[in-house]
Length: 298
Ligand code: HMG
Ligand code: MG
Image (tube, rainbow, N blue to C red):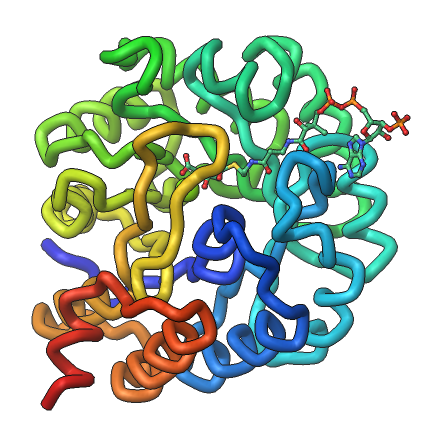
C-alpha cells in the first residue's frame, strides 16, 4: 500500500545551491526559502555550517539563517563537526544533519577523513545536539554507487547506517549521490536495513537524477513504506566533491507524481513552480525539471 501522506525534505537551498559557481546573494537565498515555505514546504534545508573554503557558496550561513529563522517551517542545517554544531546552535538551529559516507573515497573527498574517523567525529556532535534538544538527521552518501569505487556492497552501507542510528540519529537519509540507483537496488537496501533493525519510518531517501531514475526509485521506496523524500525545487543541485553528481530529484516532478497517486504533500504546485522559475531567472539558466517546463510553458 502507498502512504496517504509524504513529508518532502526540500534541499534546494542547500544541496541545490552548494555547487553554484557564482555567489548567490544572501537575500536571494532568503527569498528562495521564504517562497518555498509559502508554497507549503514544511522542511526546508537552509544551509551548511561547513568550512567556507570547502563550500564557498554557503559561507554566508551566519548571515542567512537569522533571515529565515522566524518562518513557519523546520529548517535543518548541515554540520560536519563540533565547530559546525556550535555555529548552528549559536543561531538557534533546532534541526541538524551530519553527513557520513558509505565509501572511503567520498569520506576523504568530502570530509577529509576515513569513514571511521568521520563517525568518531559525529558521535559527540550527535550527542550534544540531542542534549540541546535538536532533531538529528544522519545522511549516508554513496549508498548505491561511488564514482571512484564503483559498486558499493550493501553491508558496507548498512554498517554506516546502523552506526548513525546507534549514535542517536532520529532519521537517516540514504543518498544516491551520483544518481546510479535503480528500483530493485533501492528495495534491497531498504529490506536489509529493516533486517538490521532500522525501522522504515526513520528512513528518508535522497535521489539525484543523473540517470533519470529518481522517480522510479522514489516509487519503489513509497511501496516499501518510506514517507520522507528529499527533493530540490527546480531540480537544482549536485555535489562539489563528487564528480558526475547532477541535480537532485526535482520537487515539482515529485509533487506531480505524488498528487497523481492521491498522496498528500501540502505543497501548492503552482506556487512551487513559480518559485523555481523565479530562481532560474536569478541563476540565469532554465530549470531542468520537466514538470517546471511543462507547467510554465502553458
Ligand atoms: P579539514 O580541513 O580536515 O578541517 O576539513 P580541520 O578539522 O583540520 O580544521 C581546519 C580548519 O578549519 C580549522 O581552522 C577549523 O577551525 C576550521 P584553523 O584552526 O586552521 O584556523 N573548521 C571550520 N570552520 C568553520 N566551520 C566548520 C569548520 N570545521 C573546521 N564547520 C571539514 C574538514 C569537515 C571541515 C571539511 O571537509 C568540510 O567543511 N567539508 C564539508 C563538505 C561539504 O559540505 N560537502 C557537501 C555536503 S554533503 C552532500 O552534498 C551529500 C548529500 O547531499 C547527500 C548525498 O547526495 O549523498 C548530503
Ligand atoms: Mg545530495
